[in-house]
Image (cartoon, rainbow, N blue to C red; front, top):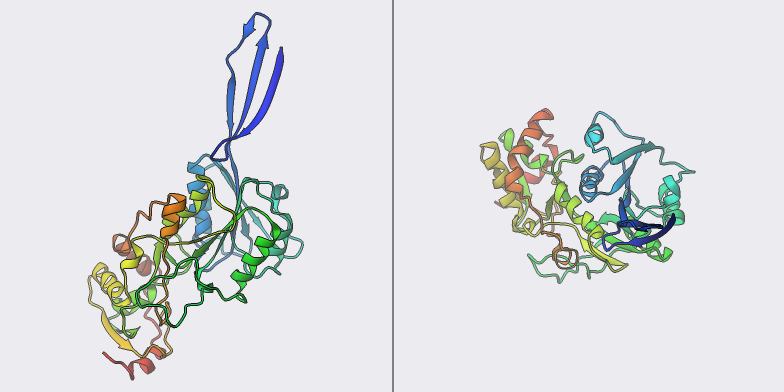
Length: 354
């Protein structure tokens, strides 16, 4: 019996090992075994991105990936998304490690794909390790922030920011992008904005819900027609996972969002959330320079994600804020529906313009 083995990489990164058995009286049919692609997700401990790793792991598992999540150990395991890790499929392994000096990547960084949902300034212990040793066979996908864009004063109102916009090079995410590009590793950059949805660790919309629930004035920076990018975390995961389905050009940049998130402005968003809560929003337009706890920028700042639709085959997003609004209300109530601190509101409302 003679065995001949060869390795081939399929279009979607699936390794195939073909064994051909030649027998004296004839040849048997070839036996083809599919080996799952491997993906590493590096997940941080908090902030607006923290739930991405959980949902991304599920998206990759649907694609037959063997997934490893390395999770910063400095977390509260009783809070989402960490308390949901036990519900992940068997093909997903979660390793909780210390993100400190001396940190090393599991398996020597040998994966088909690396999804970095943690790194900021390149001098950090994890960042230093991944820049030195992460060498994915297919692609390194860095999940950064659209907050690095520099919006020109001349930028038209109600016009989104695209991937060609200049960035503030001194911001941590921009510094990491530069450092990663210098390694020569095949890579793409994803730039996120505001994320909501199941198991998210940051609740941007509680600002609205708290004031609506308690019948309080809702200060919104004038004119209130500023648009905002809001994306369900499950759509974020779906968008990121598309890099495993298509060939990408190294260095490509993709804004993260859905094609239906561009419909919302601040006043409309308040109305949609109030409707879901069965109440009315007492919107008060205030000076954009007033100091409040408003969760978004006072000036309009939102992104266009159509490039992902065109180049990655992203669906454009399956979920809308209005469809999930009642769940947002339930989540706010489950967290105690605490009356918000309105100290800053009171000062801002002195200059309310409407």
